[in-house]
Picture 1 (cartoon, helix red, strand yellow):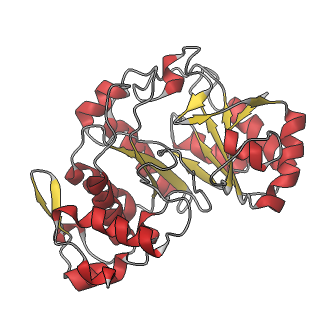
Picture 2 (picture 1 turned 90 degrees about the vertical axis):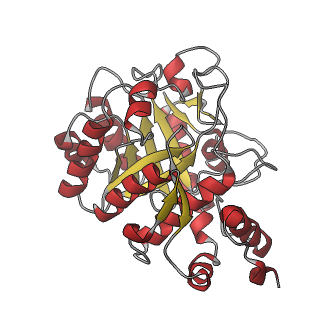
Length: 324
């Protein structure tokens, strides 16, 4: 038995549900009742109310026979990657290696793995088993908040991530959640460090979920999230150096570029789309249909580009020229 996100399962023909958007990655989840107990995560609470959820998404269980049938259909309906996620459990990577072998025997799709790893050797073992990308999640970028929300040391986790990136160039990703009390400067400082190390970053907006210790929290202001998206994009594309960024009380007040250049680089809109492994679009993982869209799961319409840029420049001069 393995769990599959509700949207992926529908795309794979395993369930029949109405969807507003379709994933381009098949998201699978191994295990339950995670040992970590991260305050933002339903899997950490271990309650009946949350155990079937990760993020805003439900993850029903399926047999391996059903998984095989679904993966046979996957490529025909636009699925381009498998993402195997795992809660932390007692048996190290043995279960993950077995799952990778099983999935590679069922499909030729590229496979990403996101799991708790103890060292770089475990990451290498997962790549050897058949994973083409490994995600070592940071989630939280402020050291004190990391210890409070996740437990342990942010610096140790960051060092593990950087060590994996050094040994597995081009194969390492991470997750960063914005809106957990960090400043924009703290987020972009670590993003800059990771970009220079060749780490691919999946940005998430914090979502307060019922049944978790942080259910009473709030998502990040959308203009703040847009500035972090823009900063990541500019650093990743090597369009500006982090030293050119200017901050006031931890908030970006300038990216060190003339406004016309910033408009030119960002107006195409891809900066506001989902980031992460190739072909990962995570539709409505952070959002509710009809609400604020933090990560667009597809190319933006002209209206959406203008809206997202207006949100980005909420604290700057508004981009009136784009409305003409």
